[in-house]
Image: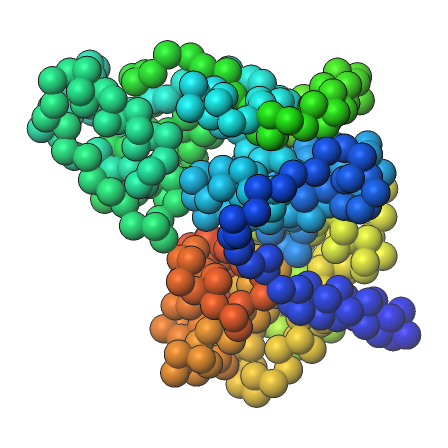
Length: 459
């Protein structure tokens, strides 16, 4: 009991610090200052700008993740300085932050263009990519850029995709209907809109489109609309010492190993991603019914709800490792697992993993203890287990501010969780944890509850 209390207090401290962290506000001035490597080291902080995205920078279960974030964090560690991340909403804003010296480095993969080379130096990682048309397979799929005449293609305003589409339109003599997507819609969401047949076409980098194709098999990203271009991060031209430090760091064997691991994590297929056929005993819900029955009473739940949760976490595969590093039967993130006494050697032990996860659920129950209705509180716990509690606390604050009930999930808090990808909402003063794409979490809550209802109907 004492051990549980210590772990819960530890987690609450973590959540408090996370939820109290103000999102960095972006302000501009006429000042055109910049800091080279000496000033960065003296200040003990590297200021990196990036953009939110499924491979660049995102908060998942209270851990910041993303290829660009993890690589620039590695560089800051190499310099032995702290890292301050300043997210930009658009590429134009990112360029302006760098130009005005508000950030030291734009840690976001951008293709080499003449316009950008006038002002900035390209640095690590300097990989190759090209733009493609994203569409769905089938009879309506086009195979030539000239077939875009008369078609609606959605892009975000003033992005490199927008610029390239304008240029392509001129090259083929006009006729492409260029539709500007709202600022609140990300490039990732445009790809998802194509996959869900809400729009017909958008533009993306090939590697990003290929990542989405692993989830949406009908996506077609075979038609290139630009030549292959090198791309990389940006720094100011005068920061030659910073350029040299980045070059030296980028050539280290340890850096290249880290990059390979992250590329495999965010774009490749890890050797851990093996589908295991899980045998379920006749008449049982899972191979672990006895464990769910043992641990569900410790959190005051029906064991079948805990089983439904495990199904949507790992499909009852105790050896599962997700693409973002969540492990085991209940898909705990390594940091959360460690907080609740689950060491690396026991990640894939189903009982140890379930024990740690129920301790975590207890701590979430404390965080949402003001929600008196137990059934409602469970929905908030499920949402927090999927996304981390910080984003749910933000959505509750938004719901309260805009006249909804912060203690009711459906049509109240879930509505504002979905709005956390909109700058008008994630920049609201009551929001402490920035951008979030809530669709996955909203689906997760509904799916777990639906599966629970099915389990209840079993004899």
